Image (cartoon, rainbow, N blue to C red; front, side):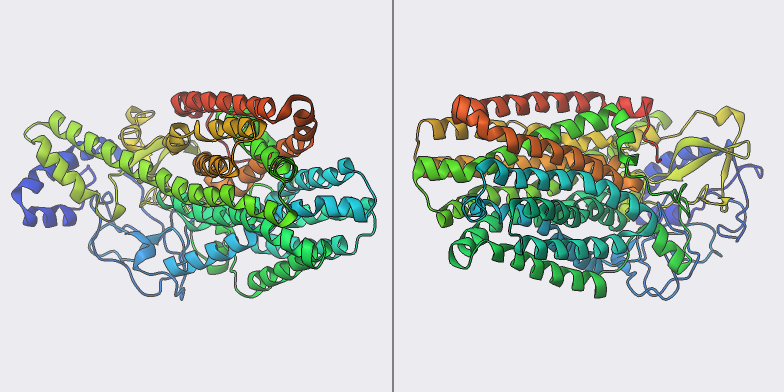
Length: 635
């Protein structure tokens, strides 16, 4: 190649050549294709000598895992963090090394400073904390009749305590998420759980329905932080390809609450009184607060980066504004793919709460069950919820990984055939070698104008976890190596569109099984109407719970993947809309059943869910196109 062209390092290509001539032919073909795009580019010198001299980053990964402590200022991806003396970085957390000349250092590029065990431990704590919000609601349900009698009030006023609790769950996360984006996750967790514990004490000491209503609002505000901010913490820890499974386990905590809550609440109410449900919640909240205070680390990517003096890629070093704006999440409703997804999640969530609110009265009237026995009936739907959450998260990751492999193989085969002289089998073999250790062919993404110069971001195929040797920016402007494009390259990204997996494939699981919950709810209503055996009704509820959380995991992960840097904010918006609608459904379901009966009442809820499922098919088909037309912005 001529001297004025940048060279592609050949270390990895040579290693493939030593393996077999067959892999060398295929790799050389693909490398030549990618070199053809890069020949139009000039490489600016790195201010710290990061890449050392001329040359482009290799298309092939190094195979040695990075181990041991790393140094401050190391290259990190999508806000990933590295720092001197961090012990949690190990081979499992390393995504790639810095690839350049042989004289370069081999400091690793990772997504997070936390190793797999530490990340799993954090997820366990967050999942445990996430139990409290639904537990505080579901433990309360078996005691409704007892509270009505003791406080000498009406059924409508007691039901209102459920409504105001749900409204608190809907509004408060808007504040918590906005605060966490500025001041960090851990501070929000600690402050909110102090509020929660004090409110539980106030609930336990309530001597009037008015005081109980007020304390329930405060209690929901304290319990709601984990719902939104917890998803942000998961996004801090896990890259896209592993995020679905992690979110599935995180949501598992929130789904255990509805399972054990009515059982505990039923037995506590019948044995030692309804007030002890709140004393138990206060004790549980205190244990979680101790874990958060003394064990849980801060995970916010910007704050941890500042602490360890690490360099970030694709995330600003400081937020664009230090003003806490609780209305900021509403901004994202302007995107059709966000609004339609959240509307559908809200329909599902509202129907689930309508069913849960009606269950104590329905099972007592139709089957003559006691308070203790009514609590046990929640087990069927709860077990389905747990299985659906775990299965839904894993299925979403599986679909995304499978689609990525297919697209990589198709890309390699297409480029090999265009260059000629390489068979499809050779190209497939080369693709498998090239993508070892999750390192993908480098692609160019949307150009960014900085100081009047058009530059391209270089990224891996998943858009966030792979090596990004080009165009590192922090809050002060360009600080790293940048690839400057000539006029002929503007608007000509090389292979991004060919390899990037559309995020809409996260919706696959929810779309395939969207019919499961509305069908189950339809049967539930008519089984109650016709007094079918209790076992049949509980079986239907199991499948309804399974379908609900399978769909929920799929749709929620889709939203988080779109707004990785604002995951807490988008989750708070999702939670707020669905909680407000759930509050409405919990109020209207009782009068609806009184006027229409359970059969027609839940037929209406079922039809709404079928309509929502059809809407999500539209999002799946056109969401990628919408995101290109209205790309998600970070406010």
